[in-house]
Image (cartoon, rainbow, N blue to C red; front, side, top):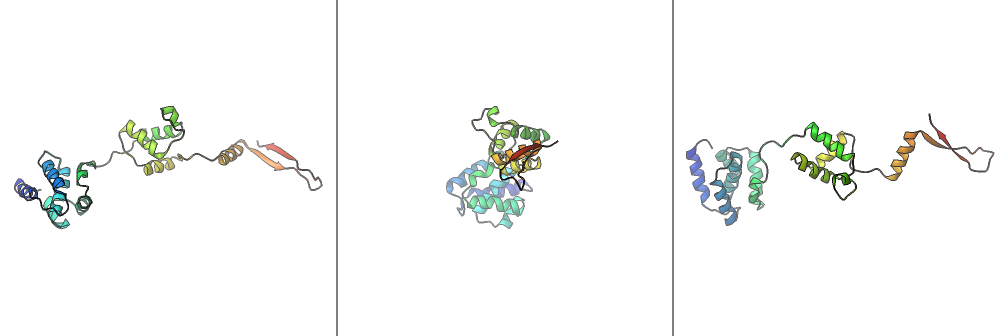
Length: 196
């Protein structure tokens, strides 16, 4: 809003319930919150939903509130879906960034059993890693992003199958199994050859 006069005009219009999208209870609740001392971003969200409820178009709302088309579209869609109560559930501003300390801790957790940290299960999932790190760092990261970070570090929450572990173990020790049967001998003889 550019000035208090236009803000008062919007507030007066909004106080009247028109009922295009919102229930009377939702409308009354949003108007009540609008009368409190809110941050500008939260105020805009509520105004968008209330103006949409009055039948204002997205373009009109953007002009009145002074917001982007994307913002108006998002909050109008929430009002249409009956989710007006979520006006304060999405944090304001840029999400917190993941630090090197966060990445180091993620790497450390994956290399140890969750049981070492008091969990009942034996292997990590991206969901549990996300929950654990959210408690430690107060940063919410999706399961998908946790898997992406692990992949970048060459790690995974998926455990190798027994066959892969045996294969890796044999390959890493340099042990090879060869068939020593000659064409003349009818018996099968096997021998282990240890690599250098």
